[in-house]
Image (tube, rainbow, N blue to C red; front, side, top):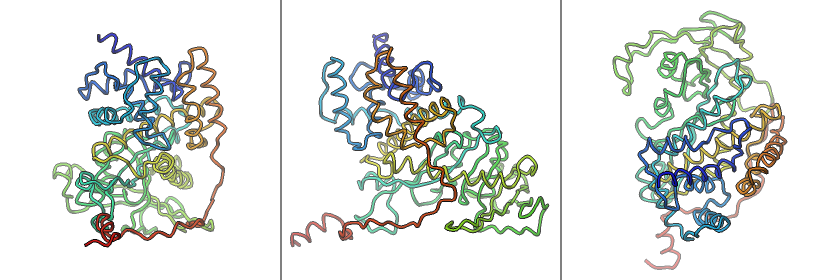
Length: 467
């Protein structure tokens, strides 16, 4: 019995891997493997059986759902029904209940571990030339996601206090960490939008183990905090961040390294924060040597004329000021990666009616994103490019059209099919538009519908004239 189950899982995982161009002989071919999925299932205490919705089938269906333009459960169940009919297998029910129940049973930990594993494997196999001066740069950035207005979602992720009851939507705050070299989503955390300890800094503290010695952590000004920087330095990680708006930079002080470039001492705050214990506070140094660089932007159309960058990279010869400024400018890639997740992959508004399904949706969106980044990395390595030069949306569109053919390709035809996919993806370059600027306005007018200003049931009563 166990042998049959393992053989079935292996066949299903091979079917799934084919759709993301992970055939033998190609780079990054072991990012998503059956052994990794089995390990994640065992860690979560999941025991496999012979029902239709096995772990591999469920993973394939969930990935298909988040990659679909429609994104409905009905569509993905119909896809499974068509696949089983084509394989000559017993048809499953066209109803969505069994799929939704199987999705609810699968622990969130399984999807989270799959995401982290694919990101680690992608980073481990990436060429050294893709890294910045041979070092891994990880970009942390925050965003929000909306979800259906259900009592369960409202209880877990309440809507902002500025919205009236019944007319708003639950809102979730999310912190994501991306790799600058490959674009992979290394890890993420989420919490309520507002409340005590519900912040991007609080989420950052939950993933300290992600940052290894030698890493460079890059972020915007909201994560530029003395305690977080000090704790990253304790891990032998460096930071490149924008100076927080509440901290002033006086270039008349400190050790001058060049024009608009100096090293100063940041003194430890006198009070221990509530989230930190006294022993940890005492172990932190009394001062942090920090390098401050003023970057002037003279390009017309840019919203900011001057940016203050702070870093723990103190060696001005190894890390010149202009190279650090160029590195910080690359932080914008995190904004583009979030746009790929939220707009291109439709993660901006989630579909789950319950908080646990919402969280699983986010993890599976991240896993699908990493698998697409894997295909992009394969195309980049094959054709002598860097992953950031290849369009994410172009890769997604190409995979969508090739997926049915990749899934059904024979062992003999699969290598040639994969090569055609990689060649097509490598041709979709990101436009080279340095210093581009556009007005932040829309030309197309929305339809003139009034906004809902009261709960829908009350609006419905008012519409029919009843009291």
